[in-house]
Image (cartoon, rainbow, N blue to C red; front, side):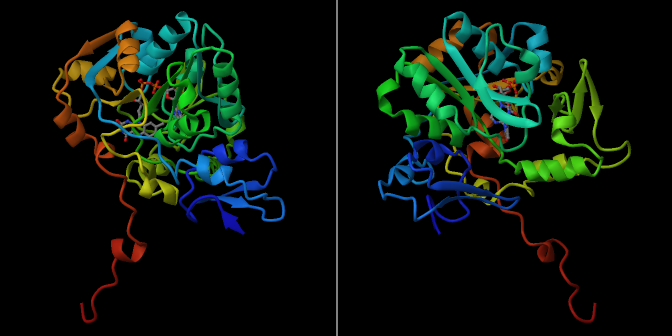
Length: 343
Ligand SMILES: Cc1cc2nc3c(=O)[nH]c(=O)nc-3n(C[C@H](O)[C@H](O)[C@H](O)COP(=O)(O)OP(=O)(O)OC[C@H]3O[C@@H](n4cnc5c(N)ncnc54)[C@H](O)[C@@H]3O)c2cc1C
């Protein structure tokens, strides 16, 4: 069976599913890789899937024109977020300007995407979900709103932003605002399911799931504002250990086209690692904010964000994902080599 892009390098953005009018594509997914398979009997060779695929054709990436570190002025927003709460501040401002916001939400065990009803439920939205999220079906919904003349803000991983841009085309550049997250790579949802299964938990058993409390990177269940660690006390959280060390990503992430300073979005958000601000501020979370376009910069300036200067060179040096994709881990035999004969 043919594939939409190079075998095992599919990012799982699923834009090809949305563009294929014949239902000829299925996504094969496992812990190692994604593949978008083309059912030859249904395919009419229009090639739309391959043309839309951002792995085959990435949108133009540009260097930031302005950069900051900063945090949400509202303490609660900052406290709830992974870094400084810039994402929530952007959502809030965009909605108050009458725009529609689409981003990833964990609901009923699924890391899907949807438009947020204002006022948005920050509890559901805030926090990094360190797993591959699923944008299936969101492309049509975004395009529909843009066609109606609405402004749309899309927040997602860089490959997902690229997919939205490829799907919608250049026609809506003024109305479509995009925010991408600096991304270390993502494990398949199956990896997370297997981790949870060790503790007798299924994703849809969880009211909410969090992967981090500021600098504490661990999988937690969140219930009524309190965080309960999933791994038993005294036991290492293997999910986050594997994530942070780049051991558990799907193959495409080790060949990511977007792990560089040039970005495909209007605004990029990450952690301001390497910041020289006082430790007290660091503990509360500081966002790194890169603006690639004047419309992105204008939106950032409208938000309730405390903005501070940041040294871009230091930021790039301190955040490897702004330089290159995570390196693929060596085979186990290289980590634990056989002793040389006679030793
Ligand atoms: C998989 C992943 C890897 C990351 N790796 C790095 C890194 O190496 N270096 C770095 O500096 N920053 C990284 N980040 C970004 C960082 O964790 C914060 O998300 C970012 O700094 C924004 O933080 P915030 O406080 O503004 O808002 P947050 O409260 O974290 O923002 C939440 C926003 O991110 C969206 N979101 C969360 N998880 C996902 C997901 N899985 N898919 C799509 N959208 C999602 C939410 O829908 C929401 O809009 C990563 C994020 C993710 C999801």
